[in-house]
Amino acid sequence: MDIQKPSAAHSQVIEEIVKLLNPELRILAITGAGMSADSGLPTYRGVGGLYKTGETDQGMTIEQLLSGSTFRSDPDLTWKYLGQIGKACDAAKFNRGHELLAIMEQHFKDFCVLTQNIDGFHRDAGSKNLIEIHGNLHHLYCEACNSQKQVDSFDSISIPPQCEQCGSLMRPKVVLFDEMLGADSVAHLSRQWKSGFDVVISIGTTSVFPYIAEPVLHCHQTGKLSIEINPTETQVSHQCTYRIPLPATIALQEIWDRYAKPTENG
Image (tube, helix red, strand yellow):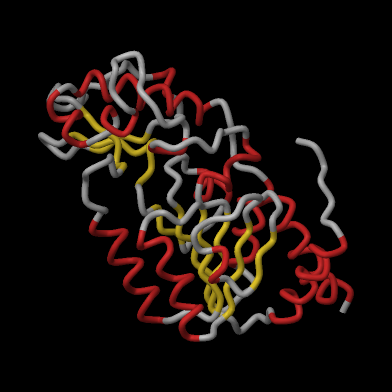
């Protein structure tokens, strides 16, 4: 990855943000495909952010192929593309940005990561208070007998995978297109809402889903601090208190270096 230093204008914004941070804050960090871009995963649309919009070889959009309805009617077809996503994730790993969010969790009163990504990198990097709102591709389960399986490498399993207990088809614990969000994730997010937050940091997401955009809009309406880290503008950019148009890892490292330095020297 090319090293990109913030401009003077970006540095000024970062300095202003750092002055507003303190250990007693409750912070919600929301991440999208841009968070894993520095790990080598492309920020295309689709489950996991790994496909361009448009038709595939099957003459269907990726949204159709990776939908709950297609999985029910033709699971082999959906698993073909889930397997490709899984192998792409296998070839990458969490980056410094993921590590920094895990570090921040240990230094603020309440720090929660809400991610749309299904690559599992936040968990691998050490985040504990984590909401994987769209699930985790490496967690499989059998819809027939509810047997569970953790997949460390998609090269180690057959596609589509069969349940070792009953022989039925397994599926990943991810939210496919046209499916409802998982009850556990929704409950976790609800608890975070009830406990409240002082700051929202939106990182590498276009915020197209209402439950992703809502925390930023809430900050705008209530006068709380909101920060967007994204090289390109999104539909919530003008609702944020501060905007840093840099890649996730670079912006987070700059924020952390300037925030942590007084503590380390003190």
